Length: 361
Ligand SMILES: *Cc1c(COP(=O)(O)O)cnc(C)c1O
Image (cartoon, rainbow, N blue to C red; front, side, top):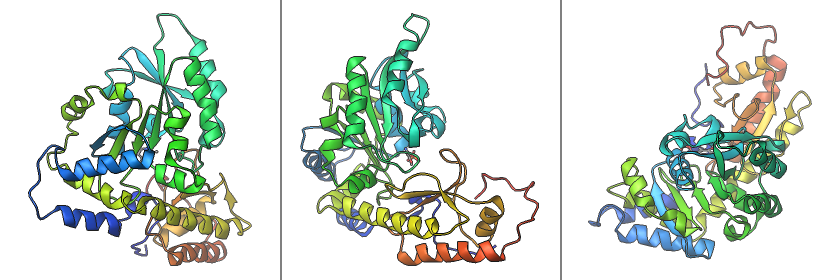
């Protein structure tokens, strides 16, 4: 197996982007008040309020699983349910944390094309059962950008909002890749959040370029009541909070978050174009953010991995998922494309893959 230091497995393979790093360095030498009562946390929260043009409530937690689980828990009671797409991270990749932290809210699954919830599915699920024996739907969770690398437009979200209003549901957004979605749409952050009915957004920092830490942004401030207690009880209240919040200052103060995400999207577009031009490969979903999903024959997946490339093949609805990040370069992209072309010619096709675990990178 060849060794490589650059990969397309996840946008969380990348390091910390320079703007976030600089802010951390600036926050480091001084003493600061602990548990979030410091100037960096105040500044980061203010910058988020500026970014969204709204007096939202802001909390910083260690990761996206915590952000999603705790914010979903704040939407209802233990006897309620949460509706999400069948490929949603909250369903497939959080080890039951939303159910755990909400003391039992059940996650119910909705279908929809290209990773996006079909609004009619919300109505169907709500009306499926209305008796006391069924967990009462209370929230809808959408992922922006989706797990399949597609993006909800403002109109898509409005159609979902129509249903959440109709059935008195809260609207939660898993924005682990919110920056990529906004960069892709070229819209204002408010146009895909509170202006289309989003009550709470989990805004991903890690994949965007911080070391650690996601922001929970409540546009519906009633939901934020006692959220600080939820964070503390679940081990999500950082004592040295400035190390979670200062990088956000670096990312937000001069628009680095959107520039860096735009770069990741552009690299995904280049990777998409290069791979789409190869006849034997098939692109699975439109590349609207920083992911490219491509169908590759298993022997080619094996050959690419043997050439040192790491990428997942079990996310969403299968295929090779190739993620670009803020630090993906044009050289990374062209090397991957060149290797795919070369191995399509050179790699053995009749190898026995029965012992190869497809989930292993
Ligand atoms: C990465 C990711 C998260 C957060 O995952 P953590 O590993 O808990 O930070 C949440 N939702 C989506 C869609 C993701 O891709």
